[in-house]
Length: 318
Image (tube, rainbow, N blue to C red; front, side, top):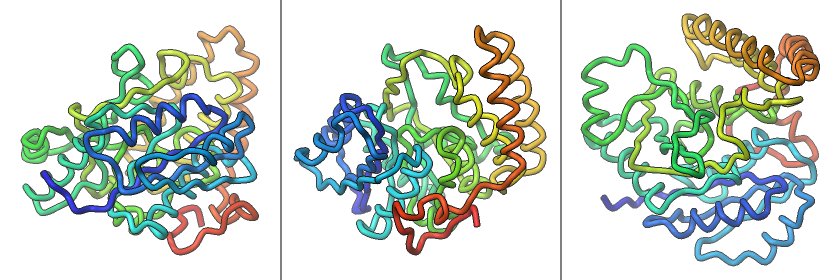
């Protein structure tokens, strides 16, 4: 399939210069390359800024250097807005700096998205790649949530275009329609790390279609093979606080989904704490996350004040 759509890749990076090089190499060497790449540097201190100043790739690259680390969530807010307003994106292809898209990653998600639209007249909100670890195993951190209640007809049409229906995805090689970002707003910057992708992708797909395809593959270069409960340490705070925000402050999930997912989270948190060798740290993060989760996240403008001035894409945290 030949597409005339404008695709802009967005990569958020922080102190992982070598991994970023692998990410950019994968982005620009695929069988289909984006029209532009936006790289958001979250105030790295490891030489990333110097590398990006001298970087000359075959695809136009727009580097946004922030003076404060606002996490992956804040970085994606900045990068996605830049892709829409400065580069006229029809699709935004997003990923972290530990993602290595394989050669056919972009072509396959775009082909699936356009084939589904041609088949049904209704474009999917986003299409996600299969995410594997460095050894090729499916990465448990990036499990796709299947769409519960999808009809046989809906599953069938997805299958015909080489995909399956999902409810949410991680920000590791996911192709999002720009129109959906404009309709539903940007991610919420105050999440900082973790679950910003769950909240955003569930929000845009709640009343729309979201797909994943195994034909598109991206490697996720995490240090360990496991999900967020494998070794969370102090970051467990963000897992707890942000999940509470998803369940109590966001319209991303239907009421019945909130009940179902809350139960699953409570089970997972219990197992994570019980199996930890440093329960004191996790318990401290758990109670702090509970306290802070009672207060709504700040607006994107408040989080990014003095760092980056947002313009015309709606802010869901207001």
